[in-house]
Image (cartoon, rainbow, N blue to C red; front, side, top):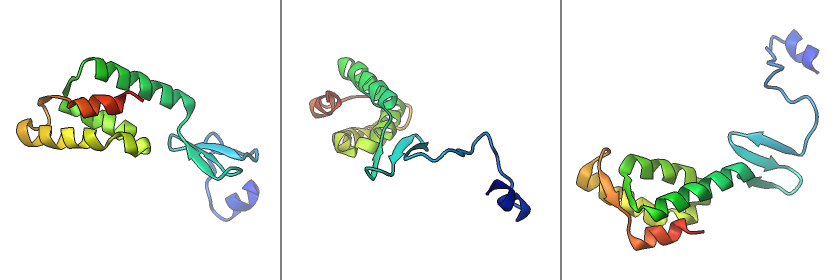
Length: 113
């Protein structure tokens, strides 16, 4: 197959290629499982996300840039980010990107999952 593609002018990067058939593939930071038809966050990312949420919920005064970063990380579990988005929007309007905001109690509750 590789030689056929190369003869057609395709360049194959063998380091990035997976030549062994697999039902679970890591792609763009997600695990794609073609057997169960599910897309998941890898366990290490979930663990890191939970640790970051715990750290922020213990000290609810946060840089807006840090909050935006957290929201970007939480995006795959979007149900847990709605009030955080509200905090971010309020903080951006009041203080801009370099401001500091105190999270609402609802936001802190969302971080404890």
